[in-house]
Every structure is written in C-alpha cells, then in structure tokens.
Length: 308
Image (cartoon, rainbow, N blue to C red; front, side, top):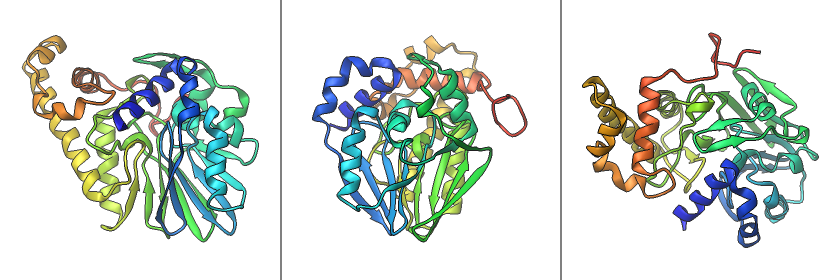
C-alpha cells in the first residue's frame, strides 16, 4: 500500500495528477496523534503536520487540492477551531497543492525559494511543472528562519539548504517535542527523491539530517515527508544508508567509471530493498551520480538562496 501510495504521490507531483484524479475519491485521510498539540494527517501526498489548540490550527503542508475538503473534514474531527497559519516545507505539488484552498483561510508562509519556484514552475527529472496560480503562493517568506507562536507552541521553521530542494524548511514544534522534516526525510526503508534540478543534493540531505539528530532530544517524534511517524533511530538509519550509498557511487566515480558502468555493476545491490518503491535503485544511482559529480543548480549567493 505504501509503495503504491508513494508512486501515486510522486506521479501526481510530476504532472500526472489529471490522469489519476479519479483516484482521489478513494483516498481516506488517516489522523494520528503525535504528541502535545501535534497531529499527523496522511492521505495521498506528503505528510501533513497540524498543531491544534485554543488559538486555532497551524498546518504544515497541504497535499493536493482535490483532497482539501477531506483534509478540512479531518481537521474538524479534531477541533472546530479555524486554520490560522499554513507552512510549506518546500515547493512540490504534493505538499503545496492545497494552497489555493487553505490560502483563502490563512496566510501561507515558506522559505523564499518556495515562492520563487512556484511562480516560475520548473523542471524535474520527470518533466515540467507549470507556474502556480497566484492563490497558491506564500504571502510571507523568509531567508533563514521564522517563528510562529500559537497554541502555547514556539513553532520554528528553519531553512535547510540543498537537501531535497533549495527551499526546504524543517519545522520544530518545541513544546510538543516534534519535528516535521518534509522531504528531507523519507521513512520506511525507501530511497528518497532528491530534486537536483531544484537545487537539492545528497550532501545537503545528509548534513540536514545530521543537524536534526544533533539538536533534538532522544525521545523526539519525527514527521517525515513520506512514510510512517519516526524516531531518531529511524532518521539515523536513513542517514546511514545515504552515506553508504553515496560512498559506493563516489568510489566508482573516483575510479573513472561512468554512470552506465555503475548501473551495470549494480553498485547499490546490497541496498536494493530500498529501491522497491517509486525511486528504483538505478534511478537512485543516477541521482547520487549527478549530485556527486555536479554542483546543485539554483542558489547563487552565499546564503544559499536563489538570486533575485
């Protein structure tokens, strides 16, 4: 089920949503209490985080627009309070698709590269993404971090550059001891999608994961971009696999081997079980090869942000 859902999610992200739109009618929103004020909602896109309290709701990501009513119904099953703030962890459509709906109810906030990439659209290895409509755009952006103080929570969004994309934010909900990592973390034993064309890199994803590990308590609850609720042990395992697979590909690059040779030699054979979802093993070799051989595209200044 998870493999099917992830494949559906990423296909939708990459432009096939119209072809698969009829499947949205079958999607059921799963709601899970995480800790403190925080819940996790899972449907057919990136995992949604929600801080719920007397001040209202802060949602982190909002999946796809056709699911907006189901997301709202799931939230009403928790509280009758309104959505007060929307945070986007990055620009991909399986995390920002509901923006036009929820942006009518509350301000959308994101790292500045999210707005820029939504405005321009862009290319991924799977095809073109069209520019977003005005109603989908964040109206509040930040360079490095922003804080939201609601529901007794000090919610901090911090820019983690060059991970999944160049506009990633990791969301720390301090009082509840919860972190939402967006697509800087795929849980459940699957290779992640690293969007090289949007300034992502495996090096940045590893560095970001290690930063989170170093800064959060051992009993923290971690909401990944995709997959089940996680612990530090899950994140540590994910980072270990990223390091080991990167090292295997890098060793081949240092020997002068081509991408085709690395595929033919099945350089990642021992991690093949991680390639059973949407990102197959050969595709992950391609992603690692590109990340290790080339500089990420996008950021042009010392702060890691897109040039204006």
